[in-house]
Image 1 (tube, rainbow, N blue to C red):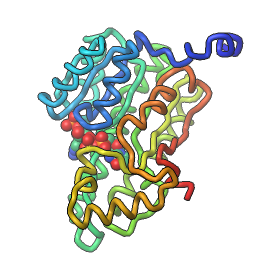
Image 2: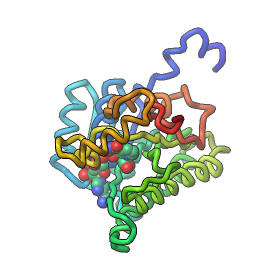
Image 3: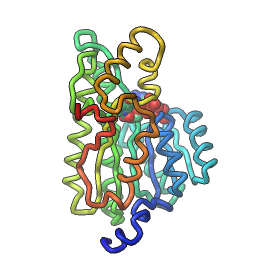
Amino acid sequence: MTGAALREPARLFDVAGKVAIVTGASGAFGRACAIALGALGAKLLLASGDRAGAEAVAQEVRAVGGAVAVVARRPDSAEDAALILGAALEAHGRADILVVASGMNKVARIESLAEGDWQGVMDANVRGAWLMAKALGPYFVANRVRGKVVFLSSVRGRLGNAYGYSAYCTAKGATDALTRVLATEWGPHGICVNAIAPTVFRSKLTAWMFGDDDAAKAARARSVSRTPLGRLGEPEDLIGMLIYLVSRASDFCTGQVMYVDGGYTAA
Ligand SMILES: NC(=O)c1ccc[n+]([C@@H]2O[C@H](COP(=O)([O-])OP(=O)(O)OC[C@H]3O[C@@H](n4cnc5c(N)ncnc54)[C@H](OP(=O)(O)O)[C@@H]3O)[C@@H](O)[C@H]2O)c1
């Protein structure tokens, strides 16, 4: 590997022919991830609770020459996760990459956050990732696939927040822990498990922060003022890290939470 890595380093990032499962595929990051991997020649299985949204993303993937199938499921149960894996196997014959891009937030200070809403945030972010990993891990091991698993964490997995993030910070902290423990369990099989931890980037989840009202402006100013690179993110900002984490380039990198945050956690 070392010699080839030095002679043809760009090939380290080659994912052509790899089969990638993406959950939350109709979301901002899920969409960007699907299009970028499709453009690189990966074959996609888009899992989504929004069939129409995912079909629209699939059209964009086809437009860049990608092979893609859609399954209208979110990973809400073991049965859903098995069905999503089964759909990838049926469409493309194998699975190499898992990107869990499904997740959500419920912003409310703990005094007014309902227990059910806390649980909903935990389920969407942590249970979904855990169930998908639980479905993919045995498949990778049984088929000797040196799989690549990428979770979406957040700077909020590491940092607190005074504006109503008790569920989200807890969920993303758990995502970080899950990343480390699965990397440890599956390292002997050559399976890499890492997380991307962004700061605020433009998506449905954060649409309110990109608005023109005073609350949005204040939240944006707070965030930008402590971001060394001086702006909020866009989904495209995460793609370089994604390609690294799903390709051979990251074969000796596992259990890491990769901050793609304009320097937010450095300040
Ligand atoms: N945007 C940010 O600033 C930011 C910052 C840090 C981390 N993140 C993380 O990045 C990931 C992608 O989010 P995004 O920013 O791209 O947001 P997004 O555009 O809202 O996409 C998230 C997707 O998750 C799925 N989803 C929504 N509610 C769900 C639920 N209750 N259970 C399971 N899945 C659900 C939906 O996809 P389908 O309808 O296709 O199933 C939704 O489109 C999330 O884990 C998020 O926490 C985002």
